[in-house]
Length: 191
Image (cartoon, rainbow, N blue to C red):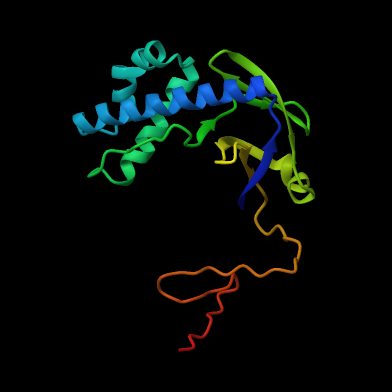
C-alpha cells in the first residue's frame, strides 16, 4: 500500500532562496519544453531527451539529473491530454529522486539546488514518524502560497497493514455515488 506523507521543511532564508531559484528554473524549463514537445506533437521521453537535454542544461542551468526529471515530468503531463499544451507555473511542485535528495537521519534532508547541495532540517508529526522508515522513491518538493516548504514523501507499506483508528471518517465524494466509505458502504441521498 502506498501512502504520501507530508513533512515540513525548515529552510534558512538562504536555503529558501536556493529552493525558489531551483523550482523557478525547473518549471521554466518544463514549460519551455512543453511548447517544443507540443509543436512536435510528441511525448516520447527518449526522443525529447536526445533533442533537448543539452539545451535544458545550458539554457536553464539544470543539473544532469534535473534535466532528465524535467523531461519525464513534462512527458507525464503531456500524455494526460495530448490536445492541450501543458503549462508549468513558477512554483509548481518538482520531483526529487534518490539522485537529487537523500535523508540524513530523521530530521534533515540533502537537496540538490542550482548552486549545489543544501541540508535542510524538517519536522513531522507522530503519524509520519511511524511510517517514515518505509520511505521509497521519488518525493515532490512543494512551496505553498504562504511560503512554507514541504516534501511529499511516498512510503510503501506491506499489504494488509492495519491503520490506526482515528476519531475521523473519510468520505470519498464520487460521481457515481454521492458518498462511499472505505468499506464500500454507500451513503443515502436525502432531498
